[in-house]
Length: 555
Image (cartoon, rainbow, N blue to C red; front, side, top):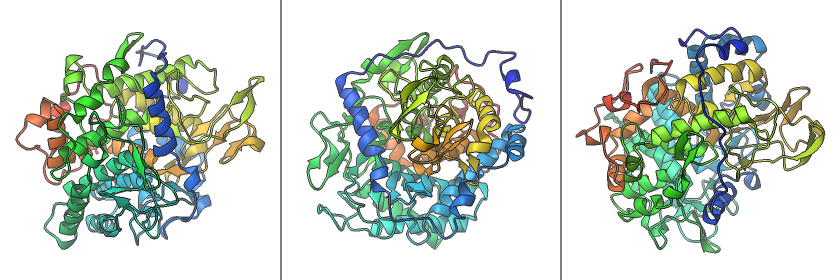
């Protein structure tokens, strides 16, 4: 398919060459420790509703109604007719979400919007990455983006740290999962989160790497970014066996759960190993990966490290270009984490084709399970019997995951680099079939469920008669992968920036990664990539089985 020439109908999408051939994806139930890990991720890393309250949006944001109102059918159909234009539009609108909802005084970004919420430090990390993309694409001036990044970094650096339960933003250089939008201090009883601190620091280092000019503002960006990253005491978070604990509470101490096995936890291990001040021990990556053999599965012709919710395949890959490099475990299986993400993406699509729970709307082109909002923790009728639905939950494709018919655009669109052709066809179909329900001023609303049709039972969002439930919020950690991965597919921007970041390189090398761009003396990307420039040579040499991109990494 040539980008810019869309199929004339959904039926035409199925004609010609078969896009994907994967058999049913059915994973056995996890071992007890991995099941507990999932529960901790869903409950303490991704939970939000208990922290709602306090912030309604920055002054630049339009009214709530205008922001969440979907575009007219004719507008989304015009976009779907031209995939390149469609992805460009999605990227810009998603950028505007971060730019307009971030508080210009503190630089903090709400966890979700327009429902009032505290700031999520993970959303702050995505917002810092958005600042870079906005400057690069010319959505805002470089000067305005640098000033916004400096505001965020300086404010975070100024927040007090300590062990008391109130009056602090963090401890040992880590930050609480949720911060008050006005004060930047701990919001209610949120935990000191290791993974969310890692997502924040990934954005911090992105800003440090991009804003490299010798101006007062950009020097200040680099100063505060370096200070924040160097202050994180990663070693303090280690437990026996050199695995990182998930969180800490001033009231009770560390969680017993640790980051074990394939997950988004790879990002915090890379960042922790790269630290020049408080690094994880050298065998931390080996300890984390030691559980991988149990998750390496052959599932009807596809062999990969399986994790049900798609976010786990996306998060680290937003900032780390895994093409052409591998750790010892992946090298022993003649694979890498980028190829793993591709296979996971194809598995997500096949799961929807099989539709084991018989939900409405699942198909070859409509798919995507990840952590996202849902209609509510209720029982509701569907196809003549009562079915269980959920509010916010980590939805996924393995037998131990939640699947209640709720789909999230971020699971699909945020996987664009993994399987460009499949995701392009699918996003066109998503826009045509549901765009007038879910595509808005700020891009896609967080989630939708065609199978949930009882408006009286919906705990939030709303039901469109005859079409199903639609969320009423955007969530920062779901918006972030959409924006960043479209840009990575277009230009490789974030990947190239982080290839030359000394901390990322050090973390990968200490973890035992080999090959590709890591063997270059310095990453070959120019200090300020030009829109349209191709990725580095190693990024161009993607794994042999990866799909060819119809976007061809053009601006």
